[in-house]
Length: 242
Image (tube, rainbow, N blue to C red; front, side):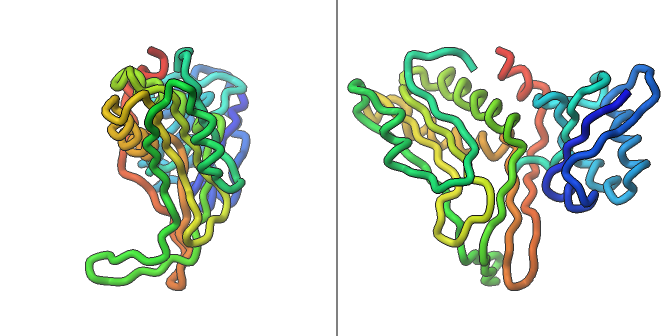
């Protein structure tokens, strides 16, 4: 059986490729078997695979789950649905985020408030009294799964704040310079006290937990991938399935 393997961020760098095919005997195999076989073929991945998050066919997966011939299995570091009458935007894009265009896309004649969070590339960070300078950030994403998880975040927002109207979640990828916007979360409502503030905060926090996006910091002192610490649980998978 042939398994399509996708690698992101640190794992991609260590393997020297972002995709490969893993061939296993035509018997029943679990995700744990796939991880073990991949590590045997690419010893440089063993350490990173130990803490990597996995997805089978664009959904979080766990060691006991079966993998079938032709499945797409992705490994990546921890990442730093339902119809509605209200407009929704979720996308991963390489172009500049147009805040006015996105705000317009999620507002209707019933909208009286929009709360918008936008992250930017920071050029200086004070870490424990030491000034760290960043030249640029390089972002990458597991795009099909990222969009699916953005839909999940949107559904979770609606469950918690049912009066929120339009929602936009947009993530930049590619090379971003200091001062450029990197991500946008916007939540609209009829009034400012109908959950817009809380929903936007929840949206960015949740995006950093379950949406597979990573950044590499480029600085005068060297480059490094910034990896998160959140490990998905079975509940993260069940939420999307309702």
